[in-house]
Amino acid sequence: MSVLEGVRIVEFEGLGPGPFCGMLLADLGADVILIERKGGADAGVAAIYKRGKRSIALDLKNEDARKIALDIVANSDALIEGLRPGVMERLGLGPDEARARNKKLVYGRLTGWGQTGPLSAVAGHDINYASLSGAAWYAGAEGEAPVPPPTLVGDVGGGALYLAIGILAGIMRARETGEGTVVDAAIVDGSAHMMNLLYSVRAIGGMPDARGQSMLDGAHFYSAYQCSCGGWISIGPLEPKFYAELLEKLGLSADADFAAQYDTSKWPALKKRFSELFKTKSRDEWTALLYGSDVCFAPVLAPSEAAAHPHMKARNILRDVNGVLQAAAAPRFDGAEPADPRPIPAPGQHAEEILAEIGVDDRLVASWREAGVL
Image 1 (tube, helix red, strand yellow):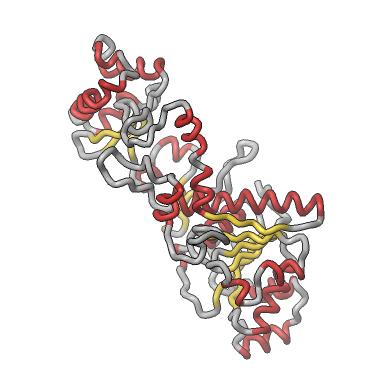
Image 2 (cartoon, rainbow, N blue to C red; image 1 turned 90 degrees about the horizontal axis):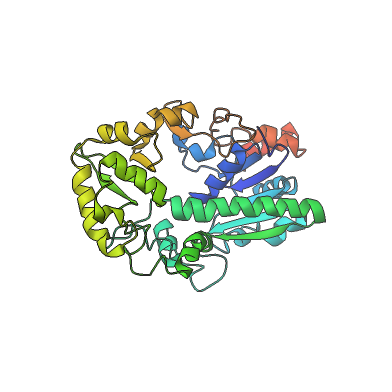
């Protein structure tokens, strides 16, 4: 279902979370026009983040190209840019110039540290933003390096998804009031905001600053364990009724130590016992015993294995499109299965049709191509 049909987004080429946000909105039906750098590198068929977008390639240092970009902006609901603070202003494409052409425009800015603050102009990456925000603190076992899953906590979760929410909220407001806004989506902000669920637990003493001491990072019943084959499984029966079912399936219901689920003093020893127990069978054997029950179990799968899993296949979540494994659009609406991802455009592929939509005639397009503007 194209729930964002009729919404037009202009995205200025960037890296990582900005393009991911544009992909998400395109997946949901928005018309995303990607302004790529003329002569830039083409990631080709593997550029999943470009799927479903239309592309025009411009030399933004050229005055005519800048005017084209602003004409596209004038006909758009929102804009995505993920450059360092000040870069768009130096190009003459900052919020003031853009909103002078389109007062309803929602100007979405995505950075690591934000548009303000002492680190705003400093380089960084996903792991840095998640580290400073506190989101990386519990990512790893006690005594080991805290390493959050690459890109997911910062770039995608704290960055792209928060920008998408900000853009959609801004569009709703603009349609009610006629006034756009500027969205300052900082990965450090978003990844910190995602911690509020844990902060709720922390407020009642459930998530101390000491790593490895909570139910979510220290308990024997909420962890991943290696199997005899070298593969891994995960268990997470936080609730007593689910934990009791796990003990029953493992033949440990009569074990007094395991019965004291929330006795934190026993957790290290019980975790060691679980570690030894789960190494007695292969991942497939544990899956045969525990899969489909309420013990809160799942095997830890590599991406290629996930694509072949019965549940993932039943929902057709992971798909091979032209030899590239990628996930279908999410979320789903009215229970409908998302369509196959739309094609990945070549750089500048849609220049003529985009320019025609903003009223540029063919002769001018030809002259711009000859002059190197396109």
